[in-house]
Image (cartoon, rainbow, N blue to C red; front, side, top):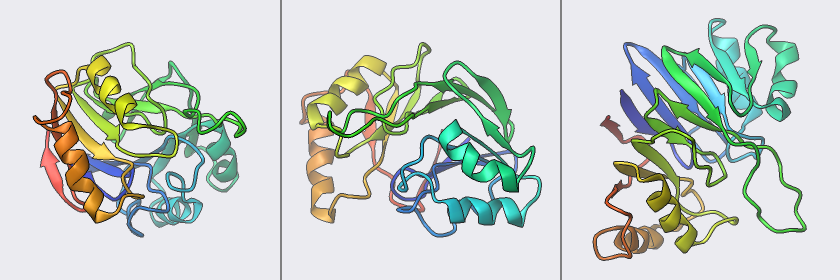
Amino acid sequence: MRLTKQGHSSVRLERDGRALVIDPGGFSEDDAAQGATALLVTHEHPDHFDEGRLRAALEADRSVELWTLRSVATQLAPAFPGRVHTVGHGDTFEAAGFRVAVHGELHAVIHPDIPRVTNVGYLIDESVFHPGDALTVPDAPVETLLLPLQAPWSKFSEIVDYVRELAPRRAYDIHDGLLADNAFPIYERMLGPTGPGLGGADHARLLPGESTTL
């Protein structure tokens, strides 16, 4: 499959002429959802869920479908009957020719005073895992981890330990839209060979619009 970073936490997976887009939110490109065969959204926060972009994609192509949790689905399902599917932890389905398994239930804790929203992660083809805003550990091996690099709910040591626990072959950064340019070399150095170590996983960063083949 071909993996393309679309800014912040949005990625596009392509194979056999079909495209699966995850989390085309407010920090991704304006056209991040366009051309998708299927759409996945991990949770309701605006950097992952942009209602206008999703509506535009669903309106542009009546064959496009969306899978997401209830808090997002209820906002879109009335306008697109039969095309917006509610999923939760333990569910499996096929979207755009990819096998998808749902893992996780809650967003990571930002602060005890802030209520936690629901959050699901998606394991694609038993290989690529997008956790959304949580350090969820699936009960299945992960070959390629889409790693939330920086967030108000995380710290660097947790990110390192998360990669070590999952033990993927490779990790690509997502959730990096709040970082200034001069932060990336620091993170790359810390997550690279001179850092504390990721348990053998390769680490790389894709720029928005950049692709790789998995």
